[in-house]
Image 1: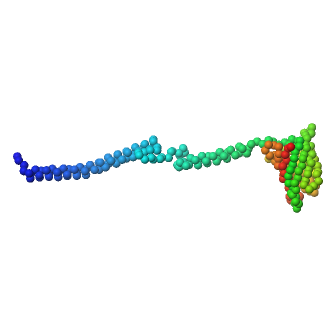
Image 2: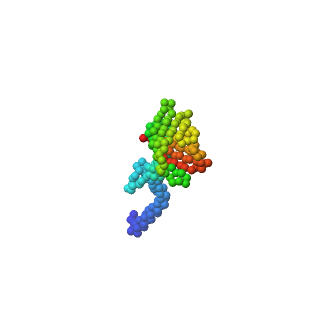
Image 3: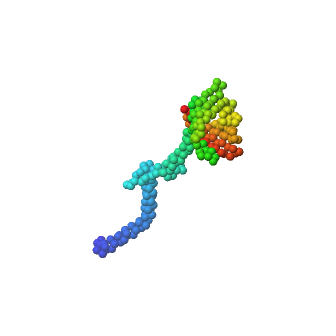
Length: 245
């Protein structure tokens, strides 16, 4: 059977058309399948990258990716928060440490033994309607055989003659003492209030005096504050320091 040129050409054209229609049909049928497969591959690749980022933080692919380290506390999300957390933890630690330093045990001051030997008192006296003046005294004390204290003070008040003040102090109970003083009318009551010693006595002219002596660290000095009242009104005050020589 002999084919003419025209028949060959028509046969080739029909084959090309069938091939084109077949390719188009295949594209329409296979395109969704290919897209689904591509999406699956992309998802797997993304999951792989995230997994690699978790186990090897710092580098994914060609670029560097920084991942914040997991916070040691579940409520701390920011990488700066651990520093603040430690700062806040330091606050209660500082609050607990302060009482320890302030609660250092100070030497107990024995008011009798404190004035044994030589002592010096310096201060400033303020009297109502008068100019303030300085006061200075040197005391010599000794413990008697009965345990009482005898104290003699040489008092030098600015602008006044030198005078002598005498004390005789004895203990009458726990943190309680009674004394006789040359300038007082009647006994001097001494008791311990907190970490201070309080002296209360009456002087001539219907004057009532209250003296507070507060030991300082080291046990060899104390602050000395005196307040004198008349009919409930403060008429004189004195602030100074007593120290052992």
